[in-house]
Image (tube, rainbow, N blue to C red; front, side, top):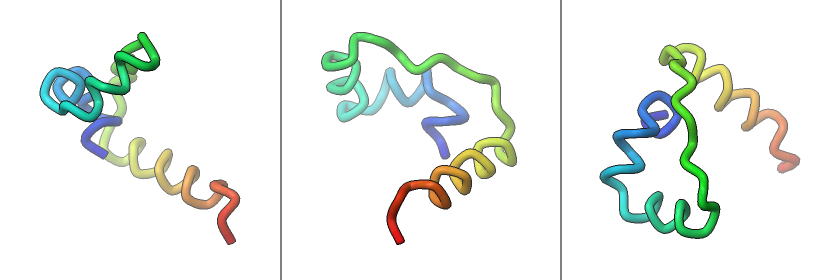
Length: 52
């Protein structure tokens, strides 16, 4: 949730996310999502992750 709603802060502080930037070479853009929108996205991903 925090990464979706605050990607810049998380990317600046989290060493694991910083490693991902080194691999991907692209920062996740801030989509200016509300907490509710972020929850909806996570629920959509959970429902469609292919795990049954």
